[in-house]
Each structure stands twice: as C-alpha cells, then as structure tokens.
Length: 172
Image 1 (tube, rainbow, N blue to C red):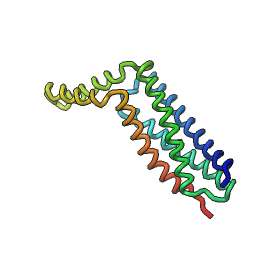
Image 2: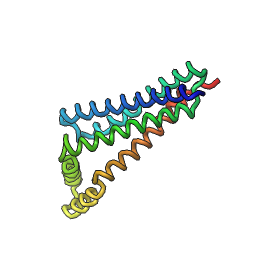
Image 3: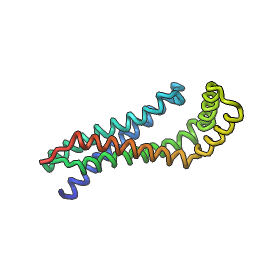
Image 4: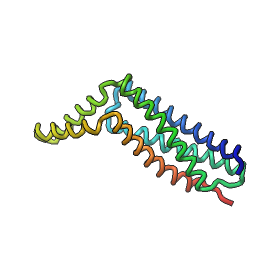
C-alpha cells in the first residue's frame, strides 16, 4: 500500500473521530440544557456515540480500502478504529476541561451531593457518608477524572474497534 492510500484512510478515520467527538459535545450540551446531566442514563450517551462513530467510521474505511486495494485487513481496520477512538478522546478531554471550568463549574460538588443523597437513601450513617464522600473527593480531581475517562474511552473504543474490524474486514 502506498503512502497516499494510508494517509487517506487515516484522514477518513480522523474525520469520523472529529464527527463523533463533536456529536458528543452537542449531545452533552443538549443534556445539560435539558438539566439531565446527572441522570443515570445520560452517562451512557457518550459511550453510544463512541461505538456508533467507530462502527460507521470503520465501515467507511473498509469500503475505501477495498475500493483502492481490493482488501481491508483486520489490522488496518482496527488501527482506524483506534484512531477514531483517540480523536474522540482528545476532543472529549478538551470539552471536559471547558465543561467543568466554564459551563458547569459546580460539576464535582453536584456529583458529591448526588452521592450523599444516594447514601442517605440507603440508610448509611452520617459517619459512613462523610468517609465515603471524603474518599470520592480524592478521585474527583480534574487529573484523575480525565485519566479515568481516557482509560474508559480507550477500553470501550478498543472493544468496539475489535468488533467493527472483525465485522468489516475484506481480505482477498
């Protein structure tokens, strides 16, 4: 495969990553303005967008590779899926920084309050609630939240990329 074919399918993967990342931002803003950002179901929307972007993008790259070279190998398609994943991860991290520092500056405090309410519903003592919240605060620093988000995105993205590559491979 020549460099122009390789760079064109990489460009296609990045394009789908950008589209997926921007779709995630738009959906997040809609959820925020609908005041549903703390609803349990809303946290899965970004994962659904990630998986959809990977499947659609890997399919597009597979079609492009098959047309240009006659085959779309598992390795190339998995690589494209991971490039889509990384692109979405970069956009998501940048958006998260904007979101928590500009859009919803009380994000962490609100999460902690929701945690407190859930612990109270379970009948936990005030002492246990305070210890639980103190532990939660340690993991809710911007750096750790970004690290956990990046790890989760990469894991879900790798799984989706593996499946998408297996589904869309076309070998001679």
